[in-house]
Every structure is written in C-alpha cells, then in structure tokens.
Length: 361
Ligand code: F6R
Image 1 (tube, rainbow, N blue to C red):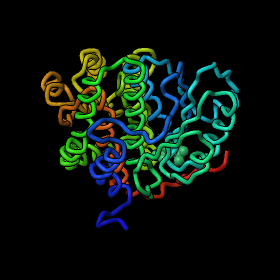
Image 2 (cartoon, rainbow, N blue to C red; image 1 turned 180 degrees about the vertical axis):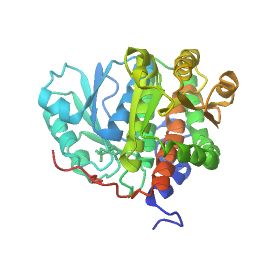
Image 3 (spheres, helix red, strand yellow; image 1 turned 90 degrees about the vertical axis):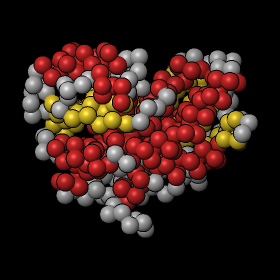
Image 4 (cartoon, protein in one colour; image 1 turned 90 degrees about the horizontal axis):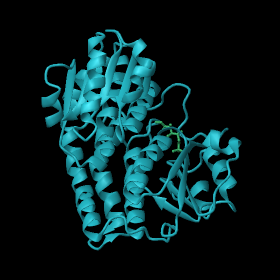
C-alpha cells in the first residue's frame, strides 16, 4: 500500500518523521537509553563494523560517532572485502554487522568469520527474524517497518539512529559523557522527527534542483567529516535509481584528482551544515566555482548567508545539532535522487539489475 504516494520510495521517505519517532520510543524512556540486551559495550576495546552498500555508509558515519563520543577506535569494512581478507581480530573486539534485510550473503559470511574470534557479535537489522539477527549474540532492530522500495531510505536513517544510540551508550559506560551530556543529546534526538518534517516541507525546492540535476551526465557529491559518508550515500542513491553517474569525495580530496573533472556540465552537490569544518568546505566550493562548476549547496541558514550568491542553487535546512546532521541531511539526498529518477522516467521502486536482498555472493 503506497498510502497515496506514486512510489513506495516516496512513501518511505515521507514516513521518516513518524518512523523515527516510533523507533525512538522503542529505545528511549525518560531515564535514558534501553537497548534491551547487554550488547557487551562496557568492556569494548575496539569495534569492527561490516556491511554492504547503504548499510556500509551508515557504518562509516557511526565510526565518527564512536570515535568522537566514546573514544573507541573503529574499523569499517565492506563485507565482500572483509570476509576474503580474513583480517586478524584483536582481543576485546566488538563486531557490528548492519543489514536491513539481515540476509545479505557477504555480510552473513563476514559475521560467521567473526564467530569465535570477536568478543561479541552485535547486529543492527530491520528484519528481526533474519539469518544475521539469529546468528548474532545480540540483534538490535531498527524498527523501520517493511521497506519495499529497492533503494534504502528509512532503513538508513533508522540504522543511523540505533548506531548513534549505541555510540552514546558506549560513551556513557566508558565515562566519556556524563549524565547531563547524554540527556542533552537525547533531547536533541527527540526533536529530530520535527526537524525531519520541516525538511520535508522543502520538497518543492529540492524537486526543482533535482529536475536540473536530471539533465546532467555526471554529478559529484562532496562532504567533510560526518557529511562525507552522506555524500557517498547521496551519490549511490542517485546512480542506483536515476542511472546518472555520480561520485562522492571527501571535500579535502578534491584537489588530489577529482577537480580535473569539473566544468560547467558537472553539477557538484555540497552537503555542508555550518559546523566547525564549514570554512574549509567553502574554500573547496570556491575552487569548484572558479572552474565553472555549478554548486548545489545543502546547508543551514547561516551557511547559506556565508556562501551568499556564489552557488548555483542553495537548499536551506533547519538548524540541527552537529552529531545529528547526517540523519537530517539524508532526506534531501534521498529526495534529490527520487525526483531526478521521476524526471527521467526510470523505475524508481524496481531499478534495473538490482534486488532488494542480495543473497548471492
Ligand atoms: C542501496 C541499497 C543497498 C543495500 C545493500 C545492503 O539503496 O539498498 O546498497 O543497502 O545491498 O543490504 P542490506 O542492508 O539488506 O544488507
């Protein structure tokens, strides 16, 4: 049931405020975070995260959170690389597997490799009865509800939600954040569904930008820090449903090669809330503009003011606490891909050559 939307993907993007609010209710009480199981976070010395595709980008985002908030070193790997590399797993490693379907063959094989090697195996899944959930010591559901569109949308934001809660809980157990710091961050998280709604109200403006993007052959996405994994996710989303070639780079890597691609035919999507790294991103943006590149800047009101007049287009999102920006900025990334695909007339919910659950290796 598409609830009146033209595509499941649109429905699943637009239900994110409610879905996230429900997911938060499942894990939060007035006293704090309830994971419902001992995930082995207290004694963790390092974390290895393994996943594929969009779930891999959720892990890359979580690395920033775990390292910054909980001060635990994190490695992130693509399941198909991890399993065949057969990496050593140091003592005290918590292995985390993230999968919407819980059936991705490479992720499951990576999990099996970690059995008996990692101190504890935790999975973050949407399908609670899945193989990956069953074979983990602890499986945390993301509570996204059934995701029908092949392109992952609400599962991504709900994966980020659970991973953020895990990072906060780890930080609390290790004494890196005090009770007040935790409760401030949980309040911020509780306000996120409202910010999701305010962001979805910008849909017309995002659709307008997407229409312009849909004429491009190649698109670049740039981001720094927490916005870098999101740039990767934005590029993946665009290519998988609109078939427009898209690549993402960490903004600081631009001058090490990809800047050679810039001309007026290659739009550059820059994801940059006004955070501590904004000035650096603006200077990368100016390098793009100086070479005739067309910048679509996704930022907040202050960022838009500072970049004033220089961009091709600007999409202004509500202010959001820095930690949570990847979750909020995921929405315009999804909408850009969605509207570009609709403009091109592709099969949004069933893109060519793709399956919802990749159970072959
Ligand atoms: C992209 C997408 C895929 C999946 C990947 C992993 O929109 O949906 O990249 O994220 O195939 O799937 P799961 O999460 O089921 O392991």
